Amino acid sequence: MAESVIERLVKTNPHMEIWWDSSPLIFERWVAKMVNAAPAAKQAELEAQLRRLFNAGDPAKSVFRGCTTNPPLSLEAVKADPGYWNARIDDLVRANPGATPKEISWRVYKEVIRRGAEMFLPMWEASNGRYGWVSGQLDPRLFTEREIMCQQADEIAGISPNVMVKVPASTQGVDVVRHLTSKSISTNTTTCFSLPQIMAVARAAREGVELARKNGVDLSRWRAVITHMSGRLTERKEFMAQAEYAGVQITEADRKWLGIAVFKRAYQILRDEGYPSKMLLCSVRPGPLVNGRMRFWDIEEYAGGDIVYTLPPYGLEPMFALDENLEFRPDAIDRPVPQASLEKFLKIPYCIQAYDPNGMSLDQFNTHPATLYTVADFTRAANGLEEYVGSRMVAAGAAVK
Image (cartoon, rainbow, N blue to C red; front, side, top):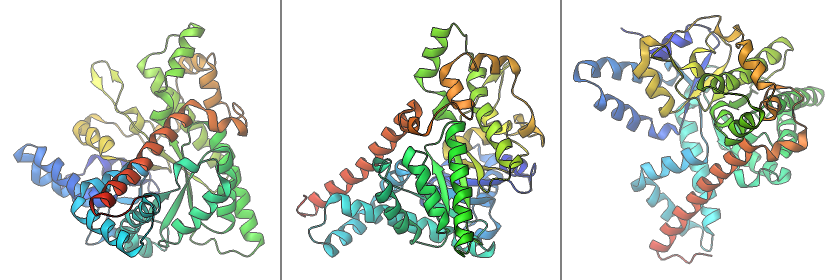
């Protein structure tokens, strides 16, 4: 039985976790697509490897240990199965006369989360709440509204015991993490790019734990992860524009090293100082090309870490394509970033904000270029789900307000 590239990665640290970064509802379609695209001689082996990633018949034996979703991924799940979701939307419209597309879409969104959580619940139960978490994100359009985010968090957390609430690393979101932690509601911090954001959230979670213990709140099944959206940090045009202005030449490798440097520094601080949150890596991209060989540093450079990778289809597919070309060293997570790259970063304000623990103040989180870009992306998807529901309501003859 040949090991998959994912299984080789996990062997570098027994506490490492790989999560599926998409709705579980599309997993079977993705497996079929991957297998059908493979050479005939490789199909049986590949299918066996993919089936081990998520074993629907016995989820506790899966390689995947959890799942993250976001508004774009939830919209994708709805559009991928219109037969089911159109009928479900029609049922919701009939059961809620006079409801707006926004109200119906919120119900649809929660059902996407619920169905995904059901698929991972056996894993959560078998591990006594350690694994099997499914993340449900707050409405990204409300990332500055503390009270509404807290209300939505209660709704999302109430869907299933294995639902983890995705909270933005906004100025207001930091306090939401503290509040939810004090109630033993598990959190996954999203729209998070910089070390100042990571540290603010880590401190908030630690303070929330202290409050919970003071009030006698049971934390035995509480977890917190902090997502670093690496690619969304390094791809912003402000990075290259500021580098050009400063006269600093940034290579493709340097861009990779910026994301890696931020994550590694955050990981080391959280580990060495005993913070209760675990680092989660997302937004991975293949590359760079080194001596004619394609690498995947966004994966390889964190091998050996007690971390979470959340991997979408677009991250998993190049991993399986590169396979044996990828090297997973157990000490990779602790290997330093090249000094030459670090020296470049310290000449660029965008990089200093991301890499220095004090590079930004709390009130700057909401206006960071990567925050603005990602919130806009998530907002388009949230609006898209409402538009989809609205068009279905019109087709069904319902009055749309």
